Length: 235
Image 1 (tube, one colour):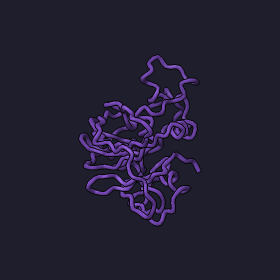
Image 2 (image 1 turned 45 degrees about the vertical axis):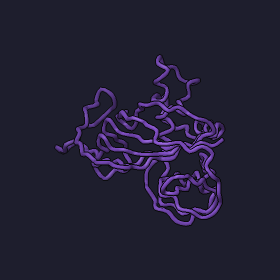
Image 3 (image 1 turned 90 degrees about the vertical axis):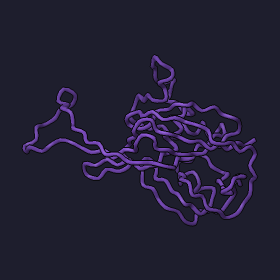
Image 4 (image 1 turned 30 degrees about the vertical axis):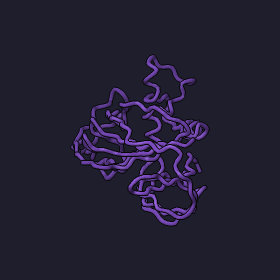
């Protein structure tokens, strides 16, 4: 049995991560990568066999090293038949914040600058009450947490389910998917004809994608078609 669930995500704190860096400005794109969602939703935890923390709930926010293990972690979701799409914004607003660099002489070796240059930066963040939506494809009913943390500041966000689709019709042909997708997850199983690119790490996303292949036809007013062969791929 295949279940496709549509979820809404509402921010209760401003959300920041560096999608792009423009000089001293660090900008956050109003979109949430599906890798980040998998960790935040608790579908994938950090390597609990190689790390030890006191609170089990903190595993999803703990990283012992700065080396990403996406392939090792997300392959487990492929084996379980679970896939999360990136989250697109429904309504959002941006906010600008200015911050100053702290004096880290006690932490790292720093040389004094020869000029009186102010050490500051600006972040363009996604504001409180902004809303996103995403899809979860699974082989059984899953219970996602109501509250999660996202971004560099571990911002609080609320998850709510909009609707479920059980055993949607599976068809084949050409179709367009306006929601964001991870290109690595469709390039091996679909013929991709056109798309818009969203440049962001660790893998740039695409949207308004014209594809050819198998898809799920959802029984809703928009007659939404979702790619049926989605799985996490790594080149």
